[in-house]
Image (cartoon, rainbow, N blue to C red):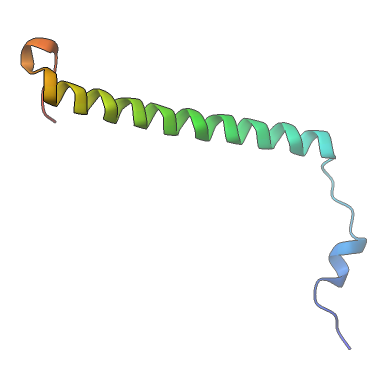
Amino acid sequence: MFTRGAHLSTRRCPVDQDTLRILLRAAVRETVAEVLQTVLELDRTAFLQVHGGRRNGYYPR
């Protein structure tokens, strides 16, 4: 009988563990930076809507 995924356990991955860890860290770092940039921009927009106006550099987009 055919077992699904059995061939995956005997197959070697061409990328070693350290390389995978480095790639994962870079991906997480980039994702976190993008999310933080979005959050900061939304926070800035909300602050300027409440406290600012055109004189403080807020121009609705």
